[in-house]
Length: 142
Image (tube, rainbow, N blue to C red; front, side, top):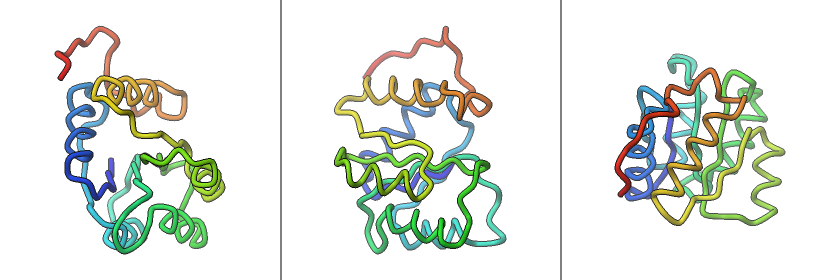
């Protein structure tokens, strides 16, 4: 999984929740839009199974990344992109979805809500084959 998030605290919370819930095996974190775009368009880049993309990024925004990827025909069913943002504005959601995002997730206000949102997202049919967690796994809440 590729996590594109400029906030260190948000990135750490997301990675912690993903690890605790055993949702994916490995997370690669990129902090700015330009590096993320270069990584996503690089032909030698290993195949990514999932991308979590923030909107507000330095250098190039997440929405601009989506537009460029769509323009280059690099968005397809094999690369689900989840926009994960503090924005809940209709125009951002519509723009993200129109440019190939498979899901738009507004950042929850608590760690507990974040874990629940991630579990729900990974259990949806789009990610069912990528979900590694189990119903019975219990972790202490932060």
